[in-house]
Image 1 (cartoon, rainbow, N blue to C red):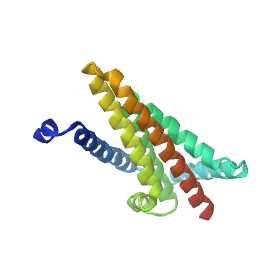
Image 2: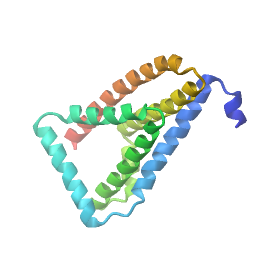
Image 3: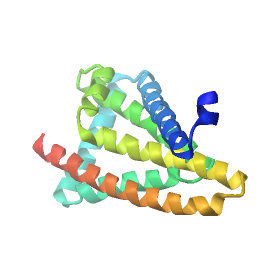
Image 4: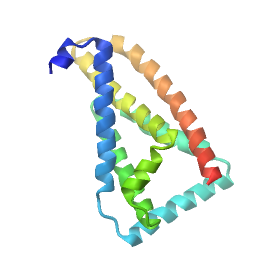
Length: 179
């Protein structure tokens, strides 16, 4: 606790981001731990493949990935409910990763590790962690009557996450087309 008390505001933000990033990863891992039947795994995989095929046909992959990720990320910025929405979304991400891995005969942990080999997972989880950490920070500052001054930082971080998620969507789309 003394690390937090003695830390500068900047260091506190970095510490909070790090804790939230680890918690986001933990939420995904917990979601992956939920058992999934082979039948359900195939169903999830088929639905995802159909969605991807439709998006490819309509040349809308980048827009869909970006829009979906940005919408979730923006919700994560909302004080109190943002982290709840975020951790729920990341839990579901883990369950989906597990289902796809099971349908392909791959261990879910290997599938998660493979995702973090690409920059996409780092960019997305980084953005989500920034959003949820800022949600907590904004709540803290609001309770201390400094919420209005924190809105400037929130706006900058929303812009940053938007750009990062756009880059991530472009990279993810390129990977989809290459595989």
